[in-house]
Image (tube, rainbow, N blue to C red; front, side, top):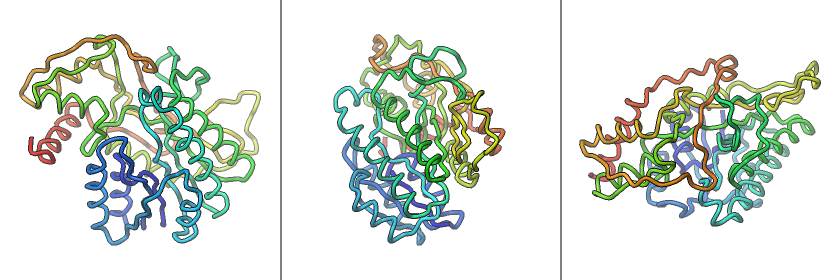
Length: 335
């Protein structure tokens, strides 16, 4: 197939693009390669992709409607995976406009382009952040998510609502994936695993928020990519018999679906840190701090729907995932 992947220079996007290219798909990567974090890491990911004959690349922002339209017009994608977004919970407190530009205006541009270019299926990144102040665990796609605690989360919830509207009005098949704390080689430098590894090797203290009482559903990148690919190949269909008297946020009469994609095996942050220490052969100096604004103390994905529909089964234990990340980090940075 011809697949357009936005955010192709990003962590998940680069891994997904590699997997699609390796199975024989043509991929058009679309990314503005911004400086939210080190652009040289993004360029290194792109260099690996550009070694593949079936890869092309457009350097542009989601909110650039003309560039978006030109990419769709020239490439004529069969399917689209939208992973580009302004990421990060805490940064949304500092620069909210960036989230509206990329995650709201940019997503409308994606939806419009998919609509007018007869795209067969749009898969897009949502986030576990949408669960916000929810306390029932594990988090289920059947749950109400009307209490976000960050603007980032609110923009992701808006994406789900906007996608449903296009599925309903125009018959555009859309699938939203709520990612749970993705980690692994080539990961994002603003995420805990990267920050902890860098500081421990440098002999600097690590900031441990919520005094280390976090529990997170850490999900290895290969398991995430497997879930995306299976979902991309599973196009949702309209359901004229859908019972709105028993409606849930996860499905509709329209060709629309929502799934959690996580490991379904949350662990305590302190245990996560211990595993990093074991792989580095060094102890961390821990600076215990209170819970940050916009953050949640625990996440746990109920992935039963994804298992039932596409056979998703995360396989990578966190012990193995951290080992692979540390090996990559030492090799890439010569640490």
